[in-house]
Amino acid sequence: MKQLAKTQTWAWKFIALFFIILFGQIANAQQSLLTIRAKTKNVDIKDGTIFQKNIWNLSPEAKPDTY
Image (cartoon, rainbow, N blue to C red):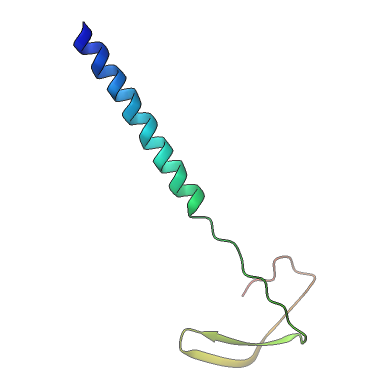
């Protein structure tokens, strides 16, 4: 009977640890969006190695204005 109680206690601790790690990873995976401060509405975009000049217009009304 003692062995069964030890096994059940260990199992509950393992399950609790699993969920703590899982929720910790989910909370840590959230990325915050970068804020662009610009004086003009036209923006140059460098996406990896590709550079495009005046390709995107910033829109302050759109929240968030995503590329």
